[in-house]
Image (tube, rainbow, N blue to C red; front, side, top):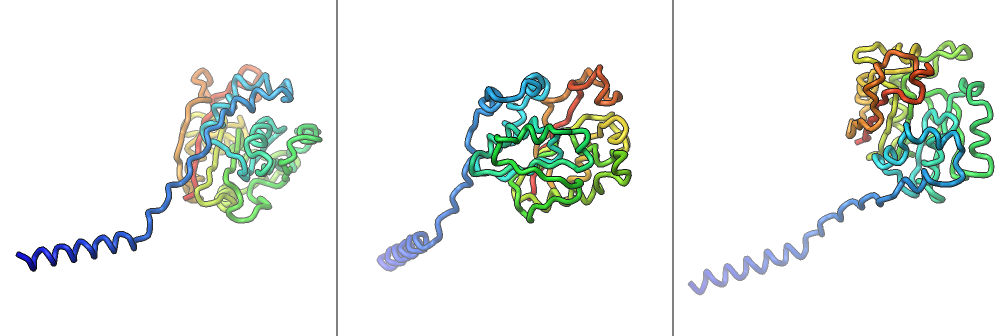
Length: 260
């Protein structure tokens, strides 16, 4: 009996020594800071036209879904005149960067809106011009890539650019390339009826969300969130998005993908 007790004590001593020598468990990943994004929406120096669009575009709710943080690097594909650039700039803060992208083919449509948006303000924003299948960012550069009301444009062929604005598969591969591992790709687009061909993007400026999901999956991006906050069942998806009857009130899908 005396021998058994000694052996048990020795085993316990060895186990305790091994436990002390084991490396500590890795610390949990820090949680994203909780931000009240409505503060950015209520900023007094926003353009009047932007404020009028808030009711339908629901910017605070959209931002809360992917939670951009101070210090983030954000690529905003097809930023247009900069409605969402305002919020992304404020979210990224002084230590962050926002790349405000538009194709050069949109210059005539946008006019001076980008210049007026940025002149003397939003100093962490850098304008970029390129087609959708090439971005002048390094690999793994962006915490977040957004493409709001836009992937359908891959099938739009402006008169100035009859060859189109970028190969769809290559464009999504570029998005995956510039995203950091763990980074988010956030998409909003006007919904076309289920089963619509991708060429609908060049006709009514809409897209079946299944087309976006397929291209993202082929580029190695994983769908994490599909939100209905911008859905409008009263829109049957057949009218051109510029039709006065539906403009600004279209049925829109919101998808969030993650780069593994």
